[in-house]
Image (cartoon, rainbow, N blue to C red; front, side):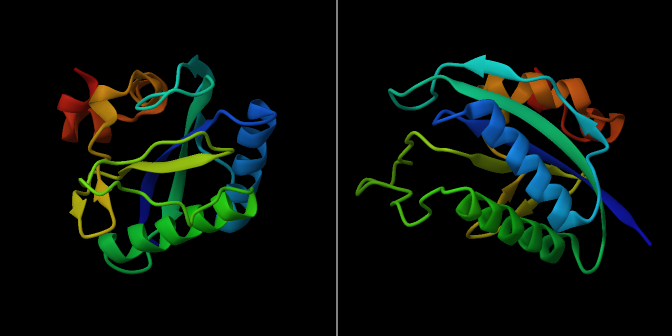
Length: 161
């Protein structure tokens, strides 16, 4: 069966941040029926885009089976990570954008972003892959570089500049 490398960025700035990351990885393992192929180190960074507590951030790489198109599989992955965020206590009902269309960032117990999904480019009304802000966010870029395979570095060199 064909597989795809899913690169996920995880962050937490509420409560026992390291335990929140560990719990998230455990739930991802359960959802996918496998363990990460690679796990980055944990980096601590100030909140990005708002005034809040420092985040602990990391990236994980899972090799996942392909079941449909890249977009269908990525959307299923998005559903799974949102379910895990909710299970861990993240309030997903919060508004994502203000009246002017600017993203609203807040403290959160867990945040799981799909950074890359193989070398696929996906853009629809709810998901953009590769994540459009990686190159602006050292908290994502540094751990992603630590675990990335050549397929990602070659397909998206602009991410790592």
